[in-house]
Amino acid sequence: MDFKIFIEKSHKLRNDVDELYIYGAGLFGREIFAILKRNNVSIDGFLETDCKESREVWGVKVYALDSVINKNAGIIIAMNIDNTIDARKNLKVRHFPSERILNGGGYLAEDKISHLLADNPELEINTVIGCPVNCKYCTQDVFISKYFEKDKNRQRWMTLENFVAVLSNTPDDCIINFAALSEPFVNHDCVAMIKMACDVGRTVLLFSTFVGATDEEIDEVLELPIHAITLHCADSKGYAKIPTDGNYYGRMEKILNASKPDGTPMVVGVSAQTEPTKEMVELCKGKHEIKYSLHDRVGYLKDSRLASVKTPHKGRFLCSRCGPKLNSHMVCPDGTVVLCNNDFGMNFNLGNIYNQTFDEIQESTVLKTVLRGMNGDDSLELICRKCVCTRAL
Image (cartoon, rainbow, N blue to C red; front, side, top):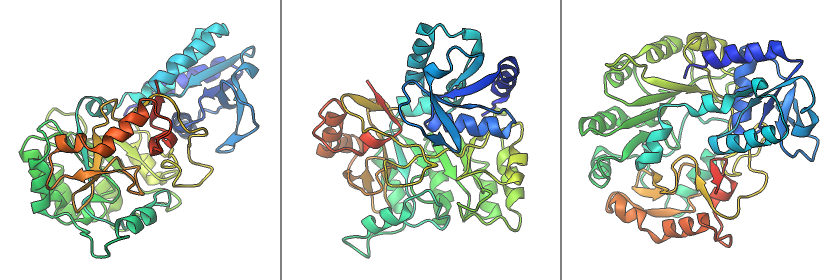
């Protein structure tokens, strides 16, 4: 994603005002802060509409919106689409000059895959249980413990035969996303699975560190008609255990430079567990802003650096990632389909894609219960209530 225009506008706004603030201290706010910091745009604080307690985000103070309204300040809105509308209304009623407002959230929202998830069903493929990358901000221990809780011999690897069943039991418009809760290439059949999905005309997404993939496999993958790749890269503190010896940066450069037949880049985004290594920043310069703002995965992770939901959602709401249909799920190696990749505790098992169709799974009692909760039944316990992807209706 190219943030060149946003960075230019941010520098100009910074030069035109005495103080510069980011309106929004959640996931989007932290993302914008990281991008501005990397591009030498200093800010004086975060803003919230109603900030009642003294606190900081990443060492930067959070202020109430009204405390800066009468200053010669600039404001960069860093929120999702719905909240940005409310933020603009708040600024308008306070007569804040529009020429000193920049919509940073709009740049974050302009990705190449979010519209796909709103319009199409999706299944995230968990090719294996257990990930050697073992990121600091991941709850592998919770997921692995729950997965093997009742059966120590439960299927750990997805086979090619299993994957054939996945394709057979999902509709043609179902996106196949190699991501989920482990590095896809740890399974040595991953390349064959990706090729199989591409051969039958599926829209294929890949979220990967490429740990486990050989140079030859990377070359093969980059020749396939994959719709989009999101690259997870090495960070400066080693929070993601990605080996950077050997030809790591050469492989990353090859992936970053890969193009589809129409000339557009295969990589649409790059992320890290914390500040990326200087080598990755250099490789991505002019191409991508590396994102490293993370959330607490519906409360499973505890760390002050992580965005979280302060008050659980009540009333009617929807998932901003997959929309009102709630048709984006994750499949485990044994075929078990769980609600989404935030369901580390496997609290919402919807069925088994190896012997059920996707449509049958959408009609499951568990999913209907979740939808009832999202439609306003506050008596139901849902992980969605603590998720940063949730939007109130």
